[in-house]
Amino acid sequence: MHRCWLASEEPLIIGQSYVLSAEESVHVARVLRMKEGQEVQLIAAECLYYGKLVVVDATASQVIVLEQLPSPECPVHITLIQGLPKQDKLEMIIQKATEIGAWDVFPVEMERSVARLDGKEAKKQERLQRIAAEAAKQSGRARVLAVHEACRFDGIMKTLTTTTYDAVFVAWEQEDKQLLSQGLAALLANKPWVKRIALVIGPEGGISDNEIALLNAVGAQCVTLGKRILRTETAGLCALAVMMAALGEM
Image 1: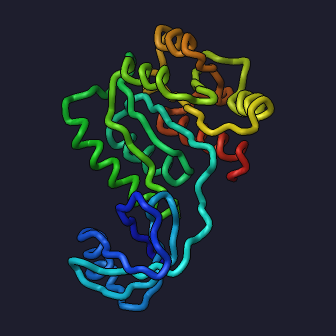
Image 2: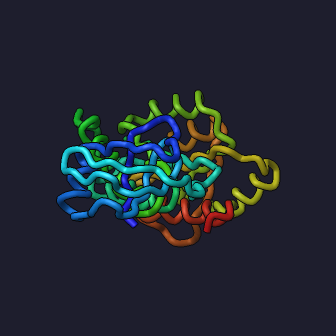
């Protein structure tokens, strides 16, 4: 069943019709060639709805909402703090992190990042947000993952000190004592009401000793993802999957 994203911060009203955006309308009418009466799902206000097309028009298609569906969202919000990789890798990470169930992503320039901020971060963010929206529709999310504008390491340190996380895990290749799964098990044993977790993944060159020291200073825990070295585009996705499994989502 095709899914449409509706830019609404308020929950939708059952029995009411809503106009799709121009982009969604073109996709429904010209690309998919859908007809009035066909079923669709709507993603809006962090909820998932079932409805039917009542008007198919390339500029303003309309859907009537018939039912609110159970939310597929994980109750624990996982933030991925991703060391800035090359753009094609970042696009894949955003797409797959959305599918797995991450809440938001912060691309961060670190000391050993191959890619660097170039002043085009806002434009790149728009593209990445579109990729997240498409991935959310494909995977049946009730929410589109938020992609924050890429920042430098000091910027994410401010975020970590001003945002309340139940835990911050850092995947570090030099850690050899605590597996991510072990850290999660200990966290959930002590705090079964966990709401927010942050996961830090280094760039292609890894996380520097200085960055690890700064992260540890704000309470971040270093963990290992196993005996094998994973590429940056693999590490975060594997770690997200481990976390979702520990939370009973997989």
